[in-house]
Image (cartoon, rainbow, N blue to C red):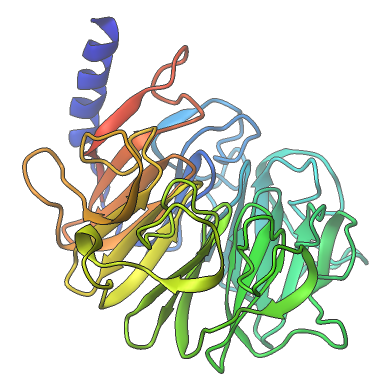
Length: 394
């Protein structure tokens, strides 16, 4: 009874919680989420055991809160964000990268292995501030940056070769991603999973490296790769995404491809078999193939998809309610998201975390459903939210 009362109060409280900023981007790590607004500020909520929320302490946060630079100032002038397992990343307008949270593997890139609950600058090995960056993403315990010259730089955990430098040595400073003969170039987008990375080249091809236990590199093997390899059977790709152990890509015609781990149906191809070569994602309720896809985001075992008509689809693992719809069984094909009264539509942004989902409607309502592994709702037990509810109004 007490838990039900708390959850009702929690939802009622959030429904009356509003901001004045406009959201530009949402990214989620395993159990925390970052929100970038159009005025260059970053908000965060979720698990905070390593200081990844950026509040100066390690207290879990149940409402979006503005990230601080230090005890006196807020982090500002940010143009991109990324989130890992227990760390966060931000790119400022001058091309410098700031990181905060856990640093056991050097994922903050500040030449130390010390956690930080305030943002710190990423530095080169020689101590100079890392610069000329245009995009950032976070993996499990590593970080990835795309520089303006089309090269990729990585730092942090490297046990599976995910840093792409040909070694398995962790780095607490950025190193440049190589092929076996030269450096990888002409990259326009990057994404990171738990232990693997995808890179999109300007010619529409996709390259991958790191852990390949489930075929998430898409090269037709299950061998880990310490250098980038080309993903098979893909061309004219315009967007990419990584789940923890699966990968996805959208082509110029709005078709969606997936590969990697599939034990929960997160590939959406109507099966539960892993795939080491990309396959087309089925259509709604398993009929035909999904069309007109414009965004895709993947979590630990589930996937969220946005189509150009503003509709959102989900598939994959659902043990924790991360698919919504008040059903707790896995689904291996796309279904629409239901909020208890009607199908959700007019969606603008989507984000999949470890075991929860977040989306923003065009009216600036931020929805949440699933479970937060950081137990941000209840200190003593994990809470499942099987239907989307309004987290905040921006």
